[in-house]
Image (cartoon, rainbow, N blue to C red):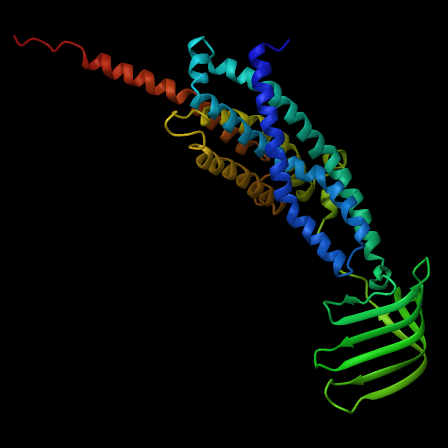
Length: 374
């Protein structure tokens, strides 16, 4: 059963954790969301898949955000207790470091379990769904995203496309207008009464075939335009380039990685295991780092604490890349990094006691009576 103090600490930490997670999630995902919206505006992906992709990517975002959110939450909550002298009162009633760790354990274990679920299971599953959506989008063409009755810019704004109507399966277009400018500034305008999207299995290419139309070529401002009438005119349709560089390695299930001994698989597995292990270590680091003098303010230790967290995460990322490049033995993995910062947490816990004992020893030594001269 949880004691009153344990419930109090857990409630304060989880409330702060919710607020920090929301702020960090909005900050971290806004750039990716804007990128997807930009791809949708350029016709690289359909607008109706932006929110599903973001939803499938959410477990991966949360697996990265929750450890740092918990770290900052403990720093801020315990820092406030030091500022308000509540921690001094608790220390006076016999609350030791071990009991403080116990009060923090409930929220830490909860976050660790959630991060493990996201990192080991939900994130690979979400990446699989994301890959499926993006692969489906890659099979579609820029004409699949055109809205009838509106001008549509494609090809890095080098091509303008317009159609009055479009069939339900997007393969028949009516009254098509295409204007395209090449690198030499020459403008090409195509007009056709009908357009059909045709797939040729021989070369695995798709073509837009215009019928009963005209083609105009020339340089704007000059009169030497070429006019060509045609019954059928084919345009090679290039598949869109997807800006998201998701790799299939991130979508591999964790159980499959356990059976694979390749450097990439080992590095990926070590990284997935490191995210939940990161949570209890940073929680232990946050407890002594939150100790501040009331005159300093609750944010006095935020910057050095963040530098420690960034160093921790940076070493994990560096170790993952080293394992991938076979510059570091995969058997050892990323365990030395975790042990290093776990040792730092233990040192931060015992350092005040060591200083106190050292000061007491110096005082006792200085107070010894001097030997009498004979």
